[in-house]
Image: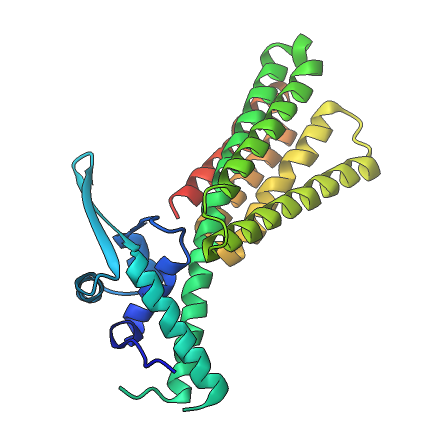
Length: 98
Length: 192
């Protein structure tokens, strides 16, 4: 059995990855929407998104809508695979024991 | 890094919860264009009935027919959005089939209500059909959010006021408040 993914396993990062994984490949979710869905603060969310981006698990896209800045994120192919591997690890752990 | 069975169970529960939230959000976004389309059907058909009553007989079937065609096109486009075999595609199918079934139940309820109550005038029939939607918003709003409940409450009051005290302008009143409530509800869902 493969080990846990230490980057994804952290509670907030796990929920971020789970939310993005439920979207079609490449579909972007707005920072504010994700933040309110997960009940996180700006700072907390930025820190965890930074960690996921550094690992190559998410892509962050920044642009402007009119004069308003907009930040959107999506799960990368690498991130999706890492998330699926981690979920398999968790399921195996529950079913088989460690 | 060691993960206990309890932590694994908690993590899987968190994943389910997060996926459910996205499922709900996608449901809102899937439903929004249907609300807006049917709002315009209501608005246009009622406005024509008010200002050009000679066209009332054909405007309703034409507007409702157009509503069905546009709804089908939107439904097909939405179901093709997510790549086949992905979790998102499975979610799309679940949401799409539930919207379809809910619409069917709503239409069947309205048709049954009209058959049983046998409204004695076009105004009565119009009011009976129109009043169904705001009460549905209120019921849904108890679960989905206070804004939907508020839209339903305001619209229900407006329709009751229109039926009892604004009969001279009843069709346009219904178009604005019946259709308007659907359009406002759709926009609200889009911003969720």
